[in-house]
Length: 480
Image (cartoon, rainbow, N blue to C red):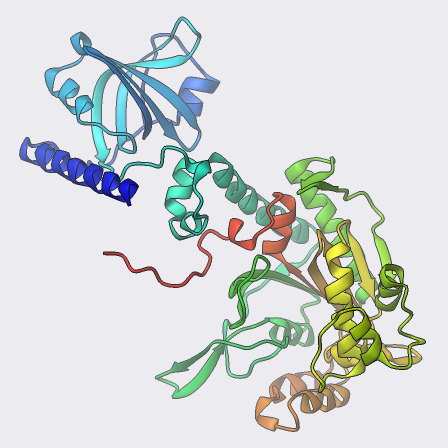
């Protein structure tokens, strides 16, 4: 409470300075200021006595009577500003005296180096560009309410260099993913975010209403069925970096709005998608982090190829010693392992829960889990000679699923049957246009989905999805 009162006093003081500047004919929110970046003019190409114009936010201020030092930062770096009363106009020195930490200013002057070798600008002119009415946190890393970092991301970015670096890396990762698939001859496409029928995954959607059409629509939970329509239409290699929306829980691995990469290639299968996923992630990581293992908590993730490949049942057996191929009572065995389940759940659903609760958290190094039960994979082909097993894999890194891939089912009769079983026979819940598309003939294909947010978590050594999403969803905040 004392800290809140202190901040409130600071806000009132700064508002008073703002009003004073306006009264004296000085705009505390000045217009454009054509300037060079600090890195370009003062770090990369320092030139003694060169006149420069830079702008940035004040993060430190030191005064000594007739002199003052300001540390200003722009996106590229830091520059010290030296102010000497005898070297500037009275108005300029007055303006300097009214600056606070957090203000954004534009400065002009000559470069020189101090006795300690620090690049510094001798101030000649200054312009107030934005008066900050709130003080910056003094010790940001000591802040205990981490939710404030997500709620006030702008403040997090101002004071925390590592956070800015994470989001710069995020942008670079997405750029490199695009470059990789463009280089492989894939076509980037866009598919609808609002859909009449939910499809492509099993999840609870967000619902909305379109007034002009007079119909309910759903924010997409996956773009899969539209991307595969493009395979029918003759595009053989497509990808989309897309936003998906699922009206479900929030955790360190889940955000209701998230970014996915989906890739489809005609005349390929899930083995081809395995090679593609492995090669793409290794290539992107090499561009971002080099070829050294990535730190992740107390361990390091090694991306050296080839990555481990193991079946779902073998992975469970390896971890628990239980061979579910030979177990007679799956329910009893799952209970022994401490896994909770609903009585209505079937054999394979329970086995999958055993995997998720016991095996998945231990899959730190890149691992492909293959041979999933077919009843959990309504969009995947089954393995030849084994109708209970699908041609599907999931990729796990750092104890979480990063990718999912199939040999895509292209039999329209079988697909219609599976959709109806999934929808308990309700035709209203089945995308019949997608079935019709398959009836025109879709080539055999491999499909791959990768969670971009989770991939970035791994590549930037972050353990929460909130640390790699600029504005994660939170409960509304009441602001006075």
